[in-house]
Amino acid sequence: MAVNFEKLISDLVTPLVVHPEDLVVKKFAEDDESMTIQVLVNQDDLGRVIGKGGKIANAIRTIAYAAASRLGKKINIDIDAF
Image (cartoon, rainbow, N blue to C red; front, side, top):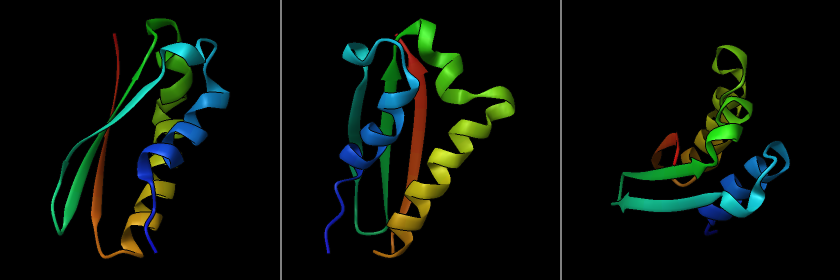
């Protein structure tokens, strides 16, 4: 069962942002054991995606980690603004 992690993370982040047209989710590196995904949002939306104390970002990471662990992979999610 293949999971499209870019779509999964995009679907989780889109309702949180005010500027969904500026949302970019890219897979940077992937090998057999791990992958790196970068989430870029508008500067105004960065606080909304990270949340107070990083709670929203941690929740997004937890969901992605659970999906990745079913495939035997580890996932690293970087959240940044442009």
